[in-house]
Length: 475
Image 1 (cartoon, rainbow, N blue to C red):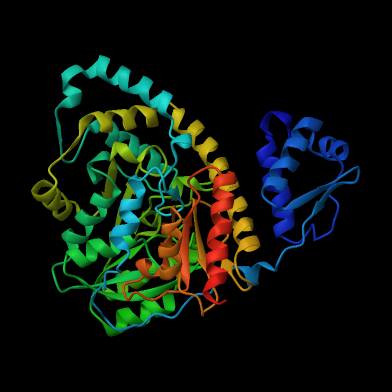
Image 2 (tube, one colour):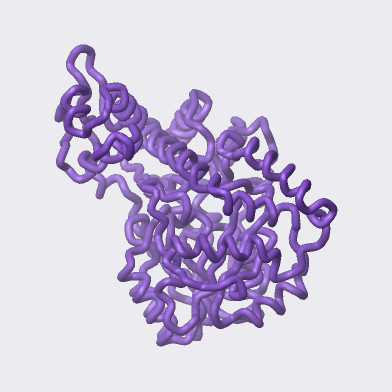
């Protein structure tokens, strides 16, 4: 490993891999600063910074005059949430009572933001975006405030095509449609391939915004369970597709919200084959893919598509800034339907935002920005995860995401996360109960916490408060 290519975070991740893989076990002493520096050809300062990162992630303890030692941990298999059963019967969506309360808490600055998955102001590149905005206005003038009619600005579509190469996809700008955010992309995709009363397969748990869209469109769903380690359960999906006339399947394969799951390449190929065999469209929500902690963006399902059945939905809300409201669709075989829906329902986009994102993607600043926020999210998630284990009841399970910034928490069966969420809100802390992520309103013993804000004493104390409220439920 050469010094020029080494950072303390890369070194920390390397040591963490040895801990997770069992090479370094609980109680083992980490190599000394000097020996580590010699072996990895870095400075002692770099090694010290790496060990401090591991300490912040609650993976090691520093002992006075003795060095750093691996912490004892619960075996990982006993820490991860289990896949929970879901009914295979088609159903309408039941809207949970707390949905509106969860959404309204986003805009309340007096509430600790552990609820909705939004990036904090600390990770938004405001200075760079301000500079780009000024440059865009100088270059385009009043044109930057005009309508951007579908399929969207050519400058941005060219950049999306280049970014798709990192996702294993070779396409061209004619296959890209720009939208006003990723939610609009999902709306357009669903409306393009379904009509009211049609049946759509959805993950459970899944992002509650997807469920609200499906509910509003008058569609019915069949729930397919998801596990944090494997993603959507393909055996269940295959069984559902053989029994019912599915029109579409909405999936998040890369750092799924809320479980953080990442589907294997073999399962991606199998998913495409299932769609081909059973004649349904796959709508891929790929919003978190650029937030891989190891810096390696997973492939889009489009890279595995053989018959043009995949509609890819992406956006800039999680990786750049949510307020820009820029999303996109990429498709090989459904462009005319997508374009028709877009023109009728959501004809124009914010031109200034499109040009800002296009410039940010083109000048190299985006990749530098990603390196910074990936590290921040990884640290936030790991520190919050250990804080949850320390504060919550015995038997609590928490996902261990490899990207994104949400934690999925499974409490013992006797706990009620909706009651917990209401009690927490009274103490000015937001969190999201699992029932909101289910079409049938189950998953009542689960909840999601956002790691989008820096880990701080306020966050730590809030997790302790939620843990105490949880313990109070069962006396």
